[in-house]
Length: 114
Length: 115
Image (cartoon, rainbow over all chains, first blue to last red; front, side):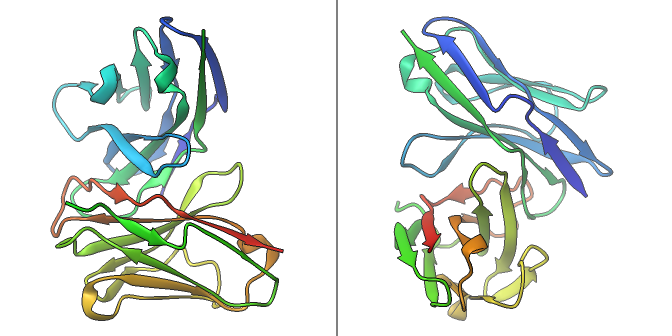
């Protein structure tokens, strides 16, 4: 079984400041890792994913995440946020090697203000 | 190409009534998933179809929930009778056949409120 922990339920940040959203996971098997974003009144959209290879993954809208196997973390970062990044962000994992369910964290609401 | 669509976007029903949610996956996507988010909590898996077959239904909360995917195209999720704790947002997702990397495409969700 897998579990995902997003310790920060809300993260307020000023525009153009850097941000890091934390994600830790637990799993007895190898996993793929994902970050999804949900903008207001929209569905979930894939930001980025880690499957294998380089531990630094770049996604859409200037976001990136780093997979750290020893710390079982997959933190999401952006060097300079914009008002339009205001949304809820979800970290998720799924077992490797097959199409199967995603296990999500509880989400982090990023609020960007001027 | 159209994305995953869900109908209705919102539903408000009384406890004890029946509601049916519909999901239309991306054309050609054999894998179809249902998830639910109860307010303030994590998005939880309900079940997974591969074409018309239930691959994994370990997340279905109880026998008041019935999911179908006749013909392997769209899917319905029926709740009968609805209880207060069924309120939440129901998401549907789909992915391509044989998807090892498991990129799932999500619909906008159906917000269900049971009064």
